[in-house]
Length: 127
Image (cartoon, rainbow, N blue to C red; front, side, top):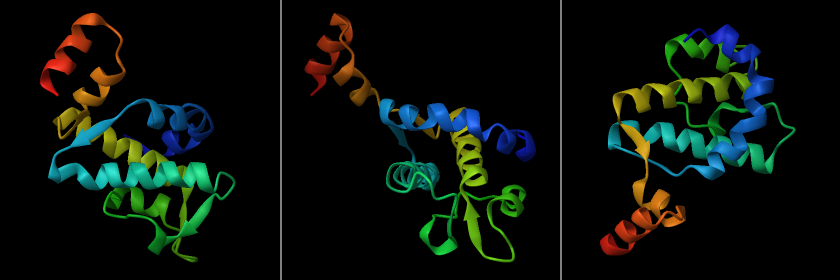
C-alpha cells in the first residue's frame, strides 16, 4: 500500500473505523498479536481522546510501524505520533495479517451474536 493516498483518505476512514472496531471481534496468532494490540489502543484513542491528533511515542505500541510507515507516523522533530498516519499504518498491517490468515474473525464471538438458527445451534453445541 502507498502511505500518501491512505493518509489523504483518513477523513473517510475515520467515519467508519470506530463502528468497525466495535462490530467485529478479531483474533490472531502470536505472530500478529501486536497488530490487534495496536488496533485496541487505536480504539481507545478514538473513544477517550477523539480530538487529540497526536500522542507521545511512548504511549503507542510501535511494533506495528514498519520502516515504510515510520516517516509518516512519527514526527522526527517532536517525537509525536500522528493519529491519521498511525491509523492507516495499523489498517495496512491488519490487511497484511488478514491476507496471511494470522488475523481472523473470532468465530465464537460471531456465532454468539448471529441469530441464524444453524449458527446458533453450532455455537450452543460447542460451548
